[in-house]
Length: 321
Ligand SMILES: [Zn+2]
Image (cartoon, rainbow, N blue to C red; front, side, top):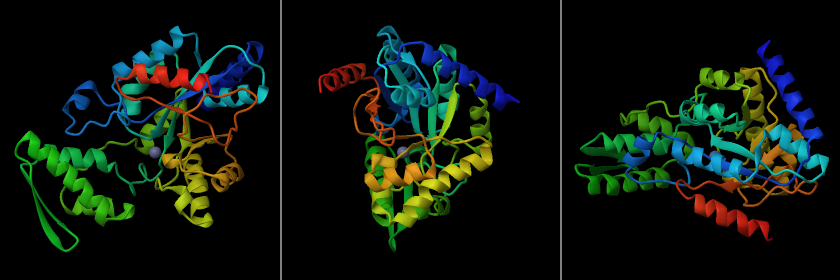
C-alpha cells in the first residue's frame, strides 16, 4: 500500500519533470553524518567521510539559494535521457549505509523535502562487515591501554592521554590493515573485546528508511571491495548479490548502484548494466550533462566537512571544462 503510494508520488515527480525545463546537474556525495559532538570528539578527524548535520544543512541551503532543485536519482536518469537543458538540479547521495544517515541526515532532508539515496554495503546489515573505523575509534577512546595479539605478536598500545590515543589509533589501524583481510576484521575485533556498537543501518532501519517518500535505497556491493581487483565472476557476485539481497529483504526494486572507491572501468560498467541498474555512481568529479552523461558512470562531487568554499571552487572549475 505504502509502496504503491510512493510509486504514485514518484511518477508525479517524473511527470512534473517532463513539464518543467530540464538541465545540467550535480550529484553530491556524502558518507557519515554523525552528531557535531561526535565529530568534535574524533581523535583523528576524517572530513571527507564525516560531515556534521550543520554542514549538510549549509550545503542544501546553498544549492537551493543558487537555484538548484533537488531531485531523486530516478528523476536524474529521466532528465539525462530526456536531453533538454534548463533548470539546474542536484542529487544527494550517501555511501555505505551508516546509521546516522537515518538518525541525523534524514530529519534535515525530510524537513526540506530533499530526496536522497543511500548506497548500502549489504554486508553491514547482514553482519559480515563492520565499520572498523568507528569501532577502533571507540575502542581506543574508551581504553587506557590496548593489548593486541596480531601476526603472532603481542602489541601493547598505551592510550592514557590524548597524544597516546591518537598515536595508538594510528598504529592499531595500520596493524589491522597490514595483517588482516576484510573478512577477518570483524572476528578479530570481537575476539579482542572491542566495543562493537551499532554504527551501520540494520535491516529494520533500512526497511523504515525505504518507506520514506524521499528515500531511495541503492546498492554498493556486499563486501565493499575494489571491483577492478576482482575476477569477473567475483565482481558480478558483488554487484548482483547486493542488488538481489536488498530487493529480497526490502521488497522493492533497487535501480541505483555506486562503485566502491569509484573503482570501475568498462568491465564494471558492463556488469552493472547487465545487473539491471539504471544509474551507477563513480567518485570521479564532474557535473551531469543532460543528453551526454553516461548513466553507468555518473560523476559526483564530494562534500568535505565544513568546506563549502571547496565545493564552490570545485564546481566552478568543473563548469569551465
Ligand atoms: Zn563506499
